[in-house]
Length: 375
Image 1 (cartoon, helix red, strand yellow):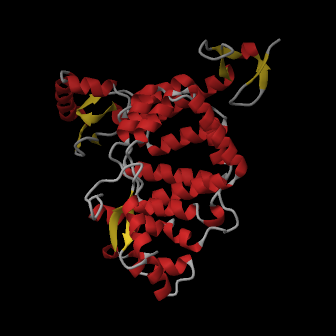
Image 2 (tube, rainbow, N blue to C red):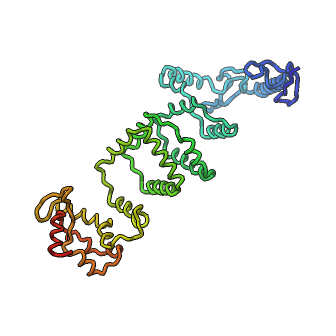
Image 3 (cartoon, one colour):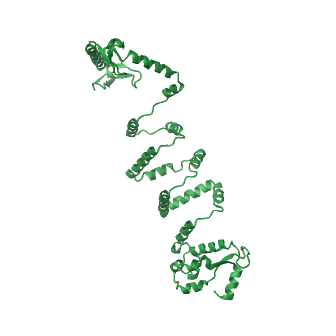
């Protein structure tokens, strides 16, 4: 004997006490025959009582035009209030004419077939239910979502909601970022997706705040030796698998020059003890000044002013005989005059970096000049 519990009266009964229903998993109804009978009897009694109350009415208010009219001006309907429909005959005819016109409109047919979107409240309920039961979207659902949303851009309000939701998620679970990164690691990006991302980012410039955040995040990761080693291995693996990328990087960087602020930052990072060739600070003071960042800028400015030509002969430099920048007022004279003892003092001295106090000379001319007039 098979036992089943009625979802109405909560009593365990024999399966024969339930009506058949092929749409259910077990092939039987959820309610037993007794509960179903009581439900329909109560419903019928309610209808009978309703008819007794409403059959004595002589007038009724039309639900469309909101006008009180005689029952004779309504179409008959047994289960309606007063035994008639909710709208009067005139309103029903008007509705029928409008509907017949709409039926011929192809746009109306398309809209009728189109599925109406869920409200925000319904979407939230569905989302909460899926989370509660631990439901995960299938590959088919994800693909369908991609097809539907292709070419669509979220509004500013939607972006704000998405951003707030992500911030809340990261605040509740600090390890979420790491989990997401590990989940995406090794995930191949198709060529079409790369092209789309490239096109979408053409001409877009990140603001200073975003750049600073990205820079701080990269620096923080780079300070961790384990993270640095991990990043290095990933890059090496990628270059081994894609040797053509090495040529691409070489071609892309050919002819490009770092900006002055960027060069300054790079110089400061490799200065003193941070430089891999640091040997305890044994470089002579004069050489330190000649190799500092400010001297490179001054030298470049002098070359550009003299159009990269020797001031005496007008000849251009070569690999054997390069151009050099010469101080008109001797370098040693300026050092003695302002009593410069440290590199910081030298960088603060304006006369040392005055472009008008410099000329462009070939290396041979420069050496000959100093041999004649001293250093």
